[in-house]
Picture 1 (cartoon, rainbow, N blue to C red):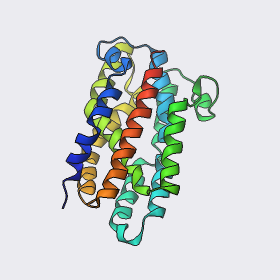
Picture 2 (cartoon, rainbow, N blue to C red):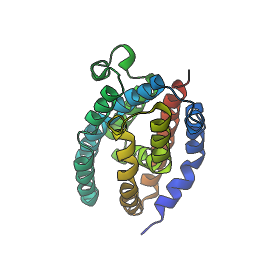
Picture 3 (cartoon, one colour):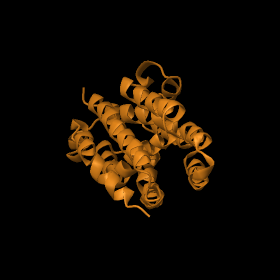
Picture 4 (cartoon, one colour):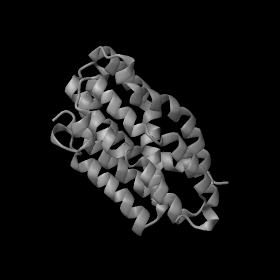
Length: 220
C-alpha cells in the first residue's frame, strides 16, 4: 500500500492555491456576487459535468486487465454521476437563466475556452496518453467541492436570496463528495507505480490551472 493520496495533495497544493486565489472566490466569501456570475458559473459547470460520464466510460475502456479493480470503481462513479448535468440545467432554469442556450452552447450559454481545453486535454490523455490522467480531474473537482463547495453554496444562497432548487448542484456535490473523497483516497493509495502517479499529478495540475482560468473569467 502506498501513501500516494497524501503525495498527490502535496504535489498539487501550489496549483490549488493559485486556483483558489481567483477573485470570484474572495468576492463570494464577502457576499459580493451577482446572479449573472452565478449563472455563468453554472454554465461552465454544465459544459464540463456533461463530459464526466463519457470520460469515465472512455477511461474504463482503456484500462488493462490488471486494473480491473479500478474499472469496478469507475462503474460506481458512473452510477453516481450519471444525469448530474441535468441538475445544473434545472438550477439554471430556477434562477432565471436560459437552459436551452446552455444545452445548445450558444449566446451566453457557450463554453469558455478554458473548459473546452480542459475537456479536450482529458480526452486526449485517455485516448493517446494514459487513461489514469482522468483521476487528476477527479481530485480537482471532488477535492474542491469538499474544501469550499458547501461554504460557497450557503453564501450564494444568502447573497442572491435563492431557493434550494437553484442550488442543487453546489449543495449535492459538497455533500456527496465528502464520501467520494474517502473512496478516492483509497483508490489512489492502490496506485503504486511512480510513473502512473506522475500522470495523475500532472493531470491534476493542468486541470487546476484550466479550471482556475475559468474562475478568472467570472469577474471580467
